[in-house]
Length: 334
Image (cartoon, helix red, strand yellow):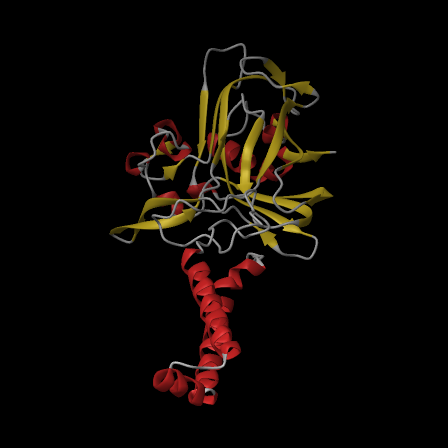
């Protein structure tokens, strides 16, 4: 990811300029006093002096006091000086402090994503009968999966990932430890129509590609719902976790034969793999400091079941085929 681009106001230099000016005047005053030592001596001995010289000294002292007073009263204004931020403040004298107690911080644009869900050419609804490519009638009661490790690729090949972070308790070997991770975890359900903040980004320019993974990569996948401090986070959902494998990447509950009451629950985990989705976008330009919504992501649930024959395939075979089909489920609508 490219570094942040900060724009600093010329007013940021004012205190330094005042300091330099004062030093220059003090040096000049020292020289002036030395040159006019005879005048000062005359004042001390006779109380008489050239009136113009005395007036010049008075004016000089008045100017010096005024400058010192202005310097002492100046209070620099703190604000966000990153032009990529939504709260960029051109009038600020200095950038936001990195002190955790500071009330000044930069906020960055959200990139949102529209979602449409279909089964072939029909709008997708749960508990509705659909026909697979093998000609079988199935009824899907529920389907939920995680999207994470989200990246937007710019035309120059640079990659933008989210700036949001979260502290997770992960396991490495036999040890637990805290890890600050990018917080780009999203749970897609049958009701998902929009991700309001797919990522937050300090990058601007022409974006050409969207990439994401289905599931949760390691070591973040070793955390548990019980360890989540933010109980409303998508990683705190117990039904999307299965010990000892860990998080369920894709959970499908369906009735593979609508003439029977028998149901099938498919739960894909880290053991089954982590499919990476790469989708080309119609190139779009993101302006500095501006929120933007990218093109619609279509999820075609019929594609999960391509090449699957529930009457003949074992559940392990069904799982493997769903993993293989994953990359065909997603497309970008213009």
